[in-house]
Length: 133
Image (cartoon, rainbow, N blue to C red; front, side, top):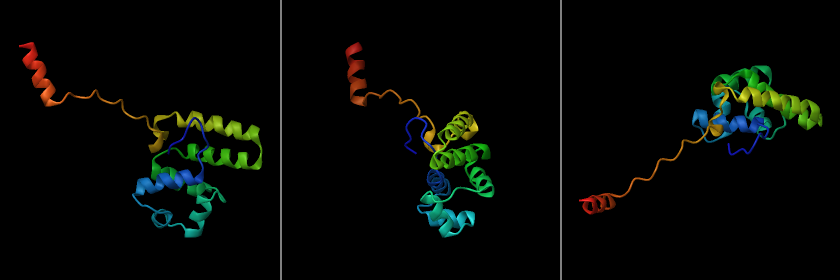
């Protein structure tokens, strides 16, 4: 997802993850897979609406993450939008704690594997063997 630090995870970010999970390239594809209306998905994309409890269950089930994590993300965004920074901070801390659990690792947040050491070309290997002989 290209996030830095502990940035909020919004409904649009979850839609992006659902597109990856379902292998579709549009919000329309996500709407069809989850039996949601196009208008509902558009509202989620533009952060005009938040996931209900039922939608949180659908999203968490599809992405194989805990519903509490998705709920904490939604509450954090709601509180921040309302200007209640103290409440947003509480939900951010809950999201971070829940996000540390292995089962809540989002696809875009997984750590990259350590790069392997480059293997020398065959010509270099042959040259080194001749020099050693």
